[in-house]
Length: 287
Image 1 (cartoon, rainbow, N blue to C red):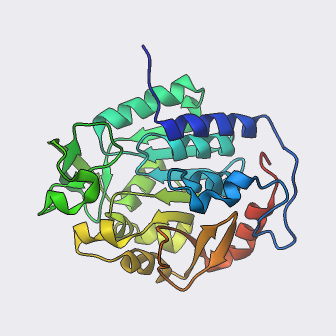
Image 2: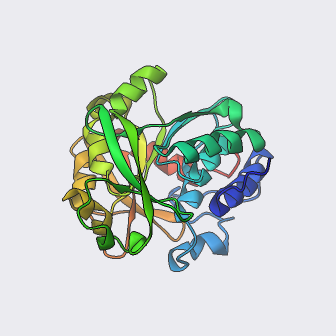
């Protein structure tokens, strides 16, 4: 049986394999926020190249050996596999993906690339309360979906004119998932759920108050409009818990006060973990 991994996932696996091989050349900048010696031109130029997912470079910096990580909206597995490679055999990575077919392929793919023991997959949608959610899934290959409550399917450019099918998926609060997994710590969390980010964080007060992970999140108005929200609402849902907002640009983290024009991805850091993040960003890959 041949499994065709998402193209970004294949790239992630190749990059992650180099991480598993051990430290590479390069050293951190003095302040640790980057760009470091050893940061390649591709990483420095990633903001200018639309098809490159710069979060993959960011996660290779943020995640370190032994980390416990959570990928909400695991989709094709690119971010999931990067985190699993970086966390190593002493780490643990949990993936959340609501679409049954994608969740099944994630499990198969993790086995094929030798990461099955490090990864657990939950086929569920995270929300502000338990229940069920109808999703509209395009029948053409895509990593995206729409909530069944979306009034105008053509309002989302990625879905305009695409045939789709409807499925019902279970929903769960993030705090409940954390309890099921028995987590008492969470180091890095990535969240990209097609505009439902505010609902995810509404179901995670304990996680934000007690576990305090570093959060990599997508926030843009186009997706948030599906839920009558704004991109700033996503940041506000987390920063109210004493988090600081950054963006990842040209190989380094830059503090920002809120939403920045042309930026969709943000890094939210607990106030007390600022120094730790400087160290994580400055260390050598593979350590």
